[in-house]
Image 1 (cartoon, rainbow, N blue to C red):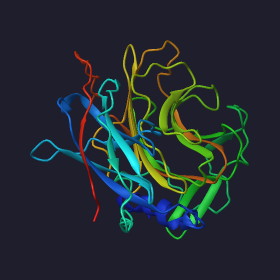
Image 2 (cartoon, rainbow, N blue to C red):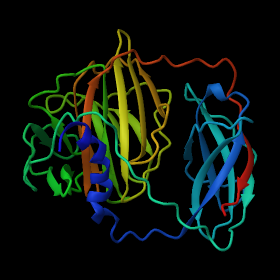
Image 3 (cartoon, rainbow, N blue to C red):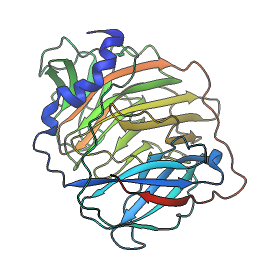
Length: 357
């Protein structure tokens, strides 16, 4: 399968064709809570986040709500997933277009309803309609991917082609590793990508364990030099932007926490300018709704920033990891510059936690 059709169904290959990732999952019973809120200066907001806990004033990791389209009254609506029997205290906050974080909204309490609502139906879909830069179909399961160079643990530049291979499903091939080694990589090296700077990279990933990490690299110097940017998720964390140099970035955290045994789509756009690299990125559930704006906003002005390079994959720790559906396209227009706020970002106003019938 090639071109548009293959790319359209690539997400299903990761999320469905590799269905063994879902076997044995023991997720606790959960329920969905729908939040409604407003904001006095929505144009200054890049996304909203919810925080919740089972004790008043004590909250866990932020959950990204994105930036939904408000209704005619200016009310935003989004949802969070909480424990089925949990009584929860919820607040909402805003993240600005330049990375500033507002104070929390007022707290709202929601008691566990009975009986719990039914689980939402599974999402369907793919990662996009562009042609993959590298086609993993037609390769023998377990074989080394020609043209990709695997490198060893601890950011090593030494080649080790035993680390990554091909996994086959009824829908085609996928790039995979079962290695639990820390900070290993594989990069597209031969032939080198035709576009090595100012490009957009899209694709999909799957992670088999909450104790593992997964990500993609770009503007990479591997296997020659230990330089790159990375959109990745360390064990137990959200997807964040990082680099092998001390990069400058106003908003490196996507706010997206991947589910174990889940599959995720991503987009990274990077532009080389005379005094900086401008980066925009987003991550979302594979087959779900793609965010309309980037979650990650970086203007990297560090002197050690790379000016271009290839792309690749990065895993660390437990679990089998998969990547697929890569597409690489030259930018057709400049990335927008970040806006500079003149006043502190106001908190949202959490109106209600709507019971789900």
